[in-house]
Length: 145
Image 1 (cartoon, rainbow, N blue to C red):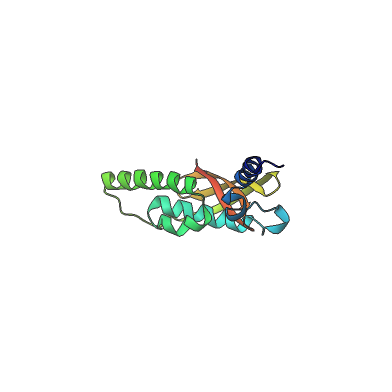
Image 2 (image 1 turned 30 degrees about the vertical axis):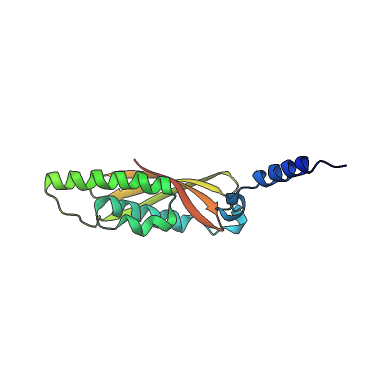
């Protein structure tokens, strides 16, 4: 005679191994399923600089960045807005040109890049990490140096 309690324990153990995010969460994509990352890196860099200068809304980037990156950029936006308010400067669209883009691929479906941004006053570097999720790139890290 089989033990019905033992079978139910096995069934519940099997069910616990499968989490919802395994099937319904973001799924990693391999590099061959993803488009060329360079245009996104350039556009995302330009947008981040514009967001920090107050010329663009951060919400416009939400689709392309992870939740952690969004929160990080939100903190930077608040600090930038405070600094402009203290100095009495209006938000202006920056005049920038994109310089060299250096891209590395540490593993399949992940791109790390540094984009050089030239402005009238200084040169900055923007470090980005893109991860392939659901057949599109999403920024999992952005740091403006």
